[in-house]
Amino acid sequence: MKIIDHIDEIREDFPILKREMNGYPVDYLDNSATTLKPKAMIDEVVRYYTYLGANAHRGDYEMSAQVDYAYEGARKTTAEFINAARKEEIVFTSGTTESLNLLAMMITNQLLHEGDVVLSTETEHASSILPWQQAGYDKKVSVNFIPLTKEGRLTIDNFKKALEDNPTTKVVAVAQVSNVLGYTAPIKEMAKIAHEKGILLVVDGAQSVAHMPIDVQDLDCDFFCFSGHKMCGPTGIGVLYGKFELLEKLHPMIFGGESNARFYKYEALVLKRTPYKYESGTMPIEGALGMAAAMRYLKKIGLENIHEYELELKQHFLERYEKELKDKVTIYNAENGCGIITFNVFDHEKLIFPQDMASFLSSKGIAVRSGQHCAKLMGDLIKAPGTVRASIYFYNTMEDIDRLVDALKEASFENTLDIFF
Image 1 (cartoon, one colour):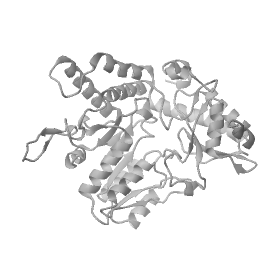
Image 2: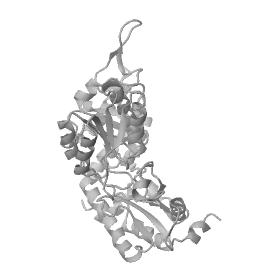
Image 3: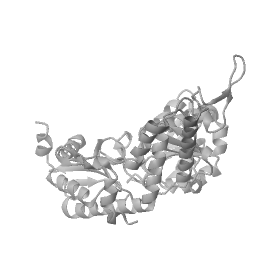
Image 4: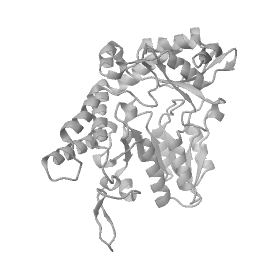
């Protein structure tokens, strides 16, 4: 499918695109924060609440059995979407953040020792750094950083150098695609090098899974975490993928109903088999069903087609930028190969505060993100206190890009502040 030839019918799938913002048709360019939701996904969530209704793995009646079937079907769909070897390698969580926190606590508490090192990078989302820092504090497990190029790329040469400098590395935790700069890490090559040294590779896939085909077996990462809401699914649902033997080896951090097979007053807890031992309590059932519906929708569109179209939109922006914006806009990631455009706007060579810029764009009906984007270590790298981020998805149009460029051309200190007074 050539998306540009079907863009009008695709946009019809997203009811929210019919709304306005500040009197303009909404121009939604904040897709790295969360994506909009197609009717097929919304309908699946509504179907659970209006027809299925029961809890999963709890009841011995028809409605409950139907929920069990749908819920486990969602697990199978998820496994197929990322090409996991088996559906038992899929653990449902509340999102990327919970998945990464659970891994940091389990791996640090159960597998690491004083003096061990977790390697990450300074462009990571807080969810990829803070869990390891906090989990490792008492055990004296440190988080150290892989040097990046001046553009903010993670290269294999720098990765090898970091491993040489940190010989007690036991875990590498990085994003496949950075949420601010959008560069893609060489995960497959990193996995090979890490595994030769007995190192685990944990991948934050929040910014990649909705924009490119993912094959966890080919990548050979040990764990891969992502959220439903960044891929046209509901909020409050996500995935912790892990190689089965590793999930079997680890012990869960949360206990309660569903995760235990049995327990008595004075006997050891017997856990259910993987992945159920990780899913205590009532899971977000409608979230799992909705996320699976979103995955089916994205597969119908085609992840390769989505990636190609995002690059077409990005290229259109860059072409107009070169002709019309180069004197006042600094782009930090023009060559990142994805739909994340991170920039700052200047007036007479002085920075317009990113939040003021985002508010000005909002007054034109354009939604972008501003600030540090939860990557608070990155400011030193790009020498900026914050940035504006426009992130593209497959329901955006060339007109959306043109509106952004036209608004940036208008921006000045005076008119960005005028909207407040």
